[in-house]
Each structure stands twice: as structure tokens, then as C-alpha cells.
Image 1: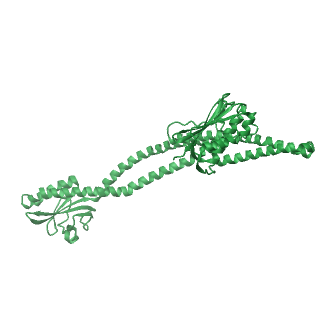
Image 2 (image 1 turned 90 degrees about the vertical axis):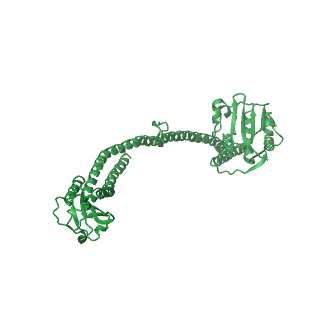
Image 3 (image 1 turned 90 degrees about the horizontal axis):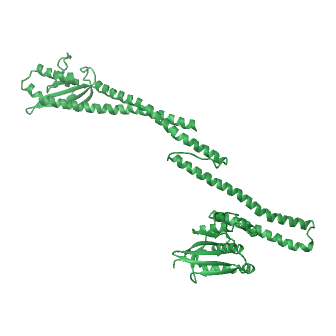
Length: 469
């Protein structure tokens, strides 16, 4: 990972350097030259206007001779590197500011008849008259409403290119100073990303090996810290899932092994004659009971799995919850009679309509009443009540039995969980009833809670959506 990321950063850095140099020294150079040419054009036009307004009148009024006028133009040539021609209407150069020029009078029209019709001319040569390519500006001269000729100014193209080269030398020097800084930034980014990434990779490897206690220590408020927190949370969830898986396997193995052991033992005893013929009916009844227990356990597991995966579709209808409570309570008449438990039904109104799945809610009531009777003392009471609050209906199942230990209250919703106090009493239970109950209520987007005190009793309260009339 380190080598790959480092190589990617180096390649990115080198590509950036090369592209910047190529761009600046090609397209950038061309743009700069065009800009310098434009600036030089403006300067030439300004000087041509100055010469026209300040000097030409003296020439035409005979206040200056051509020789004196040429002397004044030489200063412009010397200080501004601008060669000045004064051209008569016939296209002949009558004054040249270049004192070194020994060229006789030049007829521009004979060399290039279109030259004086232009305003700007780039890379001007005019045959062999000019020693090097020039940038030229041509301006007509009018005096006393008469056309008197032209002012032609030349400046070497080489000087413009030399100026551009100087500018680019400065820019390239600045870039040479900047690129090491840029390299340092790339190195900083490398260490800024790779170090936390190594921690995360190490953590992922530890978690994949089952070491969920490995701690990720990352500072700062970057996305890496958020990712580290997410990995830590994932590890905690995986740890709980792993513990749950182990507990689940242990519990289901225990709950399946006990009835299977009984069934196998009794069947073998019948086959080898250990159980006499006249006693077999009794043990066949035990085998049938254990078989039904296994069937109930399997059905509960399948239903719970279906609920967790949201595979069960709820058939939401409006029904009277009080009526369903009465019907469910009637099914426990035999169990209540055997333990002399009294069911006390308290309803806020004669009819209370809710929107829910009738079958699923009846199953919830059955599970809660079954637990309440199972863990109630003989000659005790169980209170089942409904209460309307706003858009909700609160259903309560309250017993006065053995209660739930404080450290077990949060665990009762787990699969196969049974409190130590209930293990001796709950021989038929699967430990899945409350898990199924909670999943059904959550599937309705409602809540279920428990209030319990050991030795005093427990109260389970769940909500349902009230039917809007």
C-alpha cells in the first residue's frame, strides 16, 4: 500500500511539474508575446501621435530643417529603441532617425505598395531595407487640411521576444523555488494519509482475526477519525454478534439436546424391552410431548427469523383490542384454575379500536399472559388493562409474581434468555416468547417496555395506534 500510494503521488507530482513547464513555455509564452506586442503597439501609436502633434508643424512651417528634425528624432531612437521614418505623400522616406543608416532615399511603394495602407505591421522586413523583423506603426499626417505624408515607427521584434524571455526566466526561477515546496506538500499529504490508513488496516486485520478488543487511537477531526470510530463501532457490534452466536448455539443445542435425549432413550428402552408393553403408552405420551416441544421451538425460530428480516407482511385492520384481550384470557381458563390465579380486566372504555394485525397482537397477548401466569404465585392476581392517550392505546399486563432480577431486565428480550429464577419453573418454555413479542411490536412501529421488581412482580406495557374515527 505504501509503495503504491507513494508512487501515485510521485507520478502526480512529476506530471504536474512537466505540464506546468510545457504550458508556460509554449502557450503561456505565446500569450505573453502577444501581450507585449500589444503593449508595444500602444507605445508606438502614442509616440506617433506625440511626433505628429509636437514636431511636424515645425517641419512644415520651416521652423526646423530636415537635419534638425532628424536630430530630434534620434533621441527617440536612442532612448526608446524606436526607429522613426518621415515619409512624403509619394511613399519616399525623407527623414530616418537611424544615424547609422547609409541607405539612400527609399521608395516604400516600390518595395511594398500596400505597406502604407496598413496601420500595424508585424515582422516587417521591406525587402532588405530593415536588418531584422520589425513591429511597425503607420500614421498618416495631415496639416492645414492637407495630406502631408506618413509617420512610420519601427521597433525590433527581437527586443519584444527578449523581454518575454526575461519574464519567463523570472517565472521559471519562481517555479523552481515553488516545486520543492510542492514536493514537500505531497510528502506531507503522503504521511497525513498513510499513517492513519496503516492504523485502520491494522485494525481491520485484527478484527478479521477475531480480536475485537483492539483499540484504534486516532487524533484530530478528519474523516479518518470518523472511519476509525465507525470501525470501532462495527467491531463492538461484531463482538456482540459473536457472543450472541456462541450463546445462541449453546442455548439451542441445550434446548434441542434435552428432548432428543429423552426421545432416543425411551425409544431404545422400548426396542430392547426395558420398558414393558403395558408401560409403553405412558412413555409414548412423553415422546409426543417432547416432539411437540421441538416442533414449537422450530416454529418459534422460523417466525422470529421471518420477523427480523421483515419478511412477514402485517395485515393491518381496525379491531376492538378489548375483545381480543377477553378472547385471549378465556384460553387460559384452565391454567388459571389450576394455579387459582384471577385475571382482572380493566378497560378505559367499553370498546377501544386500534389499527394492527389481529393475529400478531393476539400472539403478543398470549405470550405475555402465558409468562404472567407461569411466574405468578398461587392464589394471586393478574391485571390486564387498556388506556387511551392521544393517538395511542397503552396495553398493560401486570402480575404480582416472582419478578425479574434487575441485572436481567435488559436481557429478557434476547433469544433463549431465561433468568436463573425462572429456569426451574419454565420447563416448557423456549426462551423465544419475549423476543417474538418485541419483534411483532417493532414491526408495528410501536414500543414495548417492562417494569419489574424482584419478589414484587412485573408489568409489560406496549402501545398500539388508535383508530381515527
